[in-house]
Image 1 (cartoon, rainbow, N blue to C red):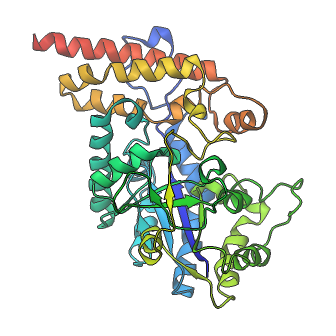
Image 2 (cartoon, rainbow, N blue to C red; image 1 turned 30 degrees about the vertical axis):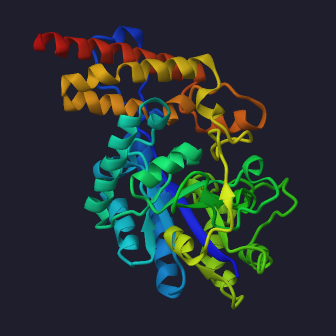
Image 3 (cartoon, helix red, strand yellow; image 1 turned 180 degrees about the horizontal axis):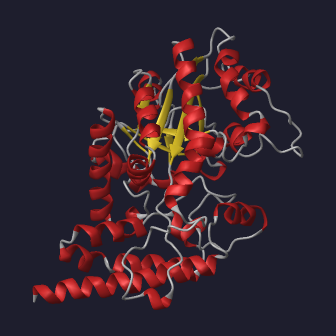
Length: 403
């Protein structure tokens, strides 16, 4: 009896504008590009809202009203919620309407969708607390489950999440970690006491998120009935099918003319045709099914790229230098007690900025180029480093006034 668990990541960063070397010392506004370029954050949010968030939310609301058994789970980055509040409040209201149905779960993550856990445990914990409070304030909902940025995960992170009071955590169902085992079960992270672990079924998730519109794919075209038959085939071969993906799959990554919205609209009904099928939220799956075994993940891995490691963000010298210089500023930035400087520093910690500096090629390179709003990874690096130079100058100026 596979319970289907839909989990959607909803995130957009504050993109750094093209910040030139002669802007240093003159321009402290790093994220607002008022031009019509692809670095205009308001423009991007409004575009994604029209193509994805509003139409998909409307479909989900209709499905929740039509099928009492239907349920979904969301994780919203704090920077996405801030931008919705500022640029698209009607989208935020539509997400709140979904949560108010009582059948939509909301998770906690780092507020700034950051890699802080890799560099600064105190900042990681601060961001988790900030995010928790944001979800309570906006949705009147207290999250129980943690998911890290881009499903980056290892044993120690699971222990940290348990220590912060979470009942569960999510990760990629990597073959390297699972070995002969299936992602379609609840597991226990190694070294923990009670926290539960859900693993993404990347094959079936990616059939929707990446392969849906590919005419080179042997299963194209994919319709709801065909996919539901794959779900039903898991009966007696798993507890829960974890379909984890970016929410922007719907309408943005897979365009409307691909049929993705009709697929979503019909999928719950097709899945529920089999009497043993049902839907669960993330925490419901963790409570309903006992863990069948222990997962040992001594090294970090993620859901990104074919390697499923940290290479999307930290594979080259540009990325590593940018990350190291950013976190080297942490102590001095916080010493200023200047909310604007701290906010700018935290926004720069969003993982997307390092992603835009990735120089990988072949299959992953195409994906990185698609999501890169800069002309090249080197342009992303130069803008970022110029901003860091200016931020340090501003930080030093504030601290000098305190002496």
